[in-house]
Image (tube, rainbow, N blue to C red; front, side):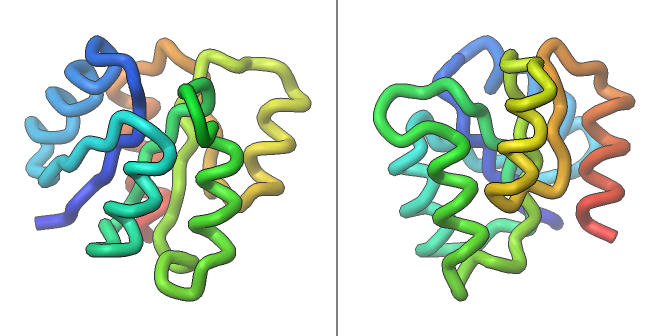
Length: 120
């Protein structure tokens, strides 16, 4: 069973994403902050990370950069899932090491397609 780590401080978004992922057979873990996400990913690297951007403390861009440059987690694909929808946000997210950048609200089809592509 593939494990996906959701790093998001919104209980509503976490619930929505978890529901979609568990229905498709993924095991889901949740971190509510960028710092917690970093620690969880380093301790037991997941198969994929869904990363919010706007969080207190370490934001998703900073966490993505640290994970993508860490030898222990560099091979874990990260998909940014954010309300930030400017072209510059998307470019910056990809430069930090994200494999994809999705803008909330996202559809189930959009999410599963991005995950499938990132894991292939």
